[in-house]
Image 1 (spheres, one colour):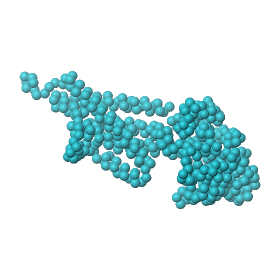
Image 2 (image 1 turned 30 degrees about the vertical axis):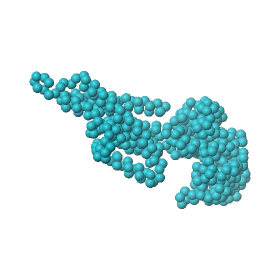
Image 3 (image 1 turned 90 degrees about the vertical axis):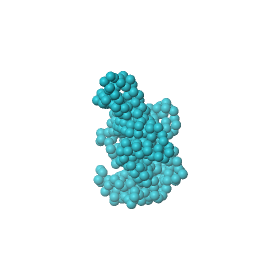
Image 4 (image 1 turned 180 degrees about the vertical axis):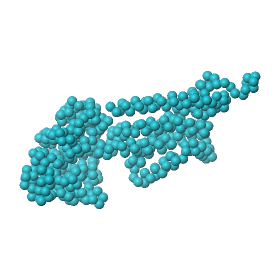
Amino acid sequence: MDPAGNAFTDLRWVDLLFLGEAAIRTIQISAVSILVGTVIGVILGWMLASGNIFVRLLVNSLLDVFRSVPLIIQLILFDSFVSIAGFPMPAFWSGTIVLSVYTAALVAMVARAGIEAVDPNLRRAARSLGMGYWQDMRYIVWPVGIRAVFPSWIGVSLSVLKDSALVSAIGYIELLRASQILTTKTQESFKIMLLVGLFYFLMSYPISKAGDYIEKKWQQ
Amino acid sequence: MIELKNIHKSFGDLKVLKGIDLKVKNKEVLSVIGASGSGKSTMLYCINGLEPIQGGSISVDGVVVNDKATDLNKLRQKIGMVFQQWNSFPHLTALENVALAPRVVKGLSKNEAKEIAAKQLAHVGIGDKLDVYPSALSGGQQQRLAIARALAMEPKYMLFDEATSALDPELVGEVLDTMRMLASEGMTMIVVTHEMGFARDVSDRVAFFHEGRVEEIGPAKTVLSSPKSEYLQKFLAKVH
């Protein structure tokens, strides 16, 4: 503490390191959630596109719940629920579970749109050559559908990366939470927010650039 | 031999086929003509099991298509089909379009499949387009690509569903020529078509469909030059 009795410390280089570590945690929780959420979402999307009326109704109403309740509320509810139920888990895991389910709900719509974007005539042609249902799925529907909805999937991934900031509400020290801690310590909220914004940009920009690149490659 | 016995097919309440009897012998070319909605295309879809039937029986070389125990994926390997919309796989080059099914369905190696594909593409006259994506091909070339794709499975039968109807008039000729070539090579073909010239010159027999029934069938020249059915007379007067 300095002689003037200032309780706050200046922003130091080590704080930047602290933010960097938090950014890595943001990347970790987002990457796992996007991966798991995409796998589940594709399966749900397939059920929506190919299932019978009961399956579609069931999946749709389930997804409606996750799409309509704000993510921050889902996080707090789930985190509290597992604690009350006697299975407390680290914030990383409860955050990842909720974020994955949230991602899955978004990806399901994208995946369904992708499957429905494939001309049924194309699929008939594949079947007429002797391809089975799963061969048609693997060699025709997947590659053609993914090209149709890839930009939407990139959009979902970017929004999950940014929405992962809400996991701070259950105490996981990712980028946003780290910035709040630093702000309390240094009172340099403007500089810190600028830095955090820069961090988020540096994480998002390569994803969207990579997305553009892949899209261009497919468009030949 | 393809044999249809008393086929009935409906889409919901709409009866499309009302008792079709038909036999197509090996190496025969049968053209099927008739107005839109007469059921000719639907019949083709039923032959390779893309559409289920509600009554009757279809057999291909003695294998019953509408039997639940029949492995349709296996049966379809010997029945090639060419559609009105050419349905090229847009994400694959011409060569990959043709090589895909031999590789994944027949289990050939990549190189074997590519060899067959290159051979079939040359056969239909687009051997110089192997690495081109379908979007860079004309409609006629894409339709020939579709023919090569079906031929690569070495089918015994070929079904053509109005293969030239969606083409610009100047591109019809090249596809018809390819079909003529197949016929001259002895391929067994059922050709649903509006091309009366093709039906007369290339096919052995012509069947005229009217409202879900075979209204008239016989040698191509007889049926087209001296039609007995009043409906066929009216139909021919309209298309000529």
